[in-house]
Length: 457
Ligand code: UD1
Ligand code: MG
Image (cartoon, rainbow, N blue to C red; front, side):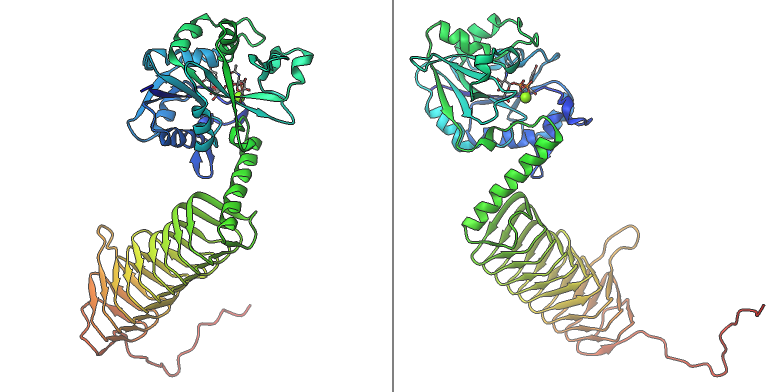
């Protein structure tokens, strides 16, 4: 079996980004440009992935998790041909190498599989595209009669006739490794930029009578490269539109498809409705009939069916049950699990807590490190005081408890089944089942007391 090697070129500085961050570490849809390419490469299950690094090399290396990458340093950036040459000692002698660019983030697995499928015995395959404005790209020079690919001519080296060609080199190509071993050392830098162009191997191939196949992309945005912030912003919008179109196609209602941001994976059931300005990060799953109000942020969240999330709610690393009502302005933090029919209202923060069926905290509360039973009503302004300055402690609130407004529950503490807590209490000890507990000083009125007056001038 022929081995497949993938090389990702990522050594360039990206001067036009005008940033101290290496170009490939800028993010698109919440993920670095390089991670997009690396994840796509991984889906091909190649025998080896080499990433060529230079500018900010150490930082780039740290940014990719996993030990499946062969990191190849390129000390000086002398061109794409020179970059690929650094990988030669690592490539499998009888394999094929697929060249990807770290700054072309959205190349799809389908396009790459189609390109790989065109690789016949010992042919090179180029991914090309017909584009309206080919400025800046290498042009594909074909034989006028046979249409065979003869060479790639860079913008800066092209003559007037070649500049008229609209078929461009995307940079992505598949080359048998023994050719690379043979051709790369032969490349010269006699061109306008004094760089060792990888693209020059195409002319070498044609000269030796070795056929160069071409494969096309389905979507032009897949081969768009990022050189500056406006291209990054443009591609982000294109990507988001693509995600929104996919959701609409699956039947999700988006109030305005141009005002949704997906930075990860969003999976929706049927009849899901999403209002404007929402951000979905990591893995988010919304079951049937879930409604998400405007300007919510959901990160790594599962929401069961028929639940409504009202505007401006932030939910992270949490599970929400069926028929819940969350928000507006709710904050649900990591480790939270809400059962069915739970209500979390405005300015309520829930952290690392489980809340059982039908319980409610509708206004201005903090519930942290707590286990809350069924049918509990937590009054406005209730705080679980879970932190003593050094350690976190647990609060347990059993079924059918009613907690009056503005109560502090000093953890560790248990509020037993059926307890009622009088408003304004500070609870430090376990409360008995079914009784009213309150810790509130008696109301006094001081007759004859006068408010202090400001001296008259
Ligand atoms: C390259 C192609 C051009 C193609 C275009 C598509 C060459 C000579 N030209 O041009 O035909 O149309 O891409 O976008 O290949 N890099 C290194 N080391 C280097 C130089 C570059 O790792 O010494 C990396 C960069 O980080 C980048 C990629 O290679 O990820 C492309 O380099 P770039 O200089 O942007 O090539 P282009 O001039 O755009
Ligand atoms: Mg470029």
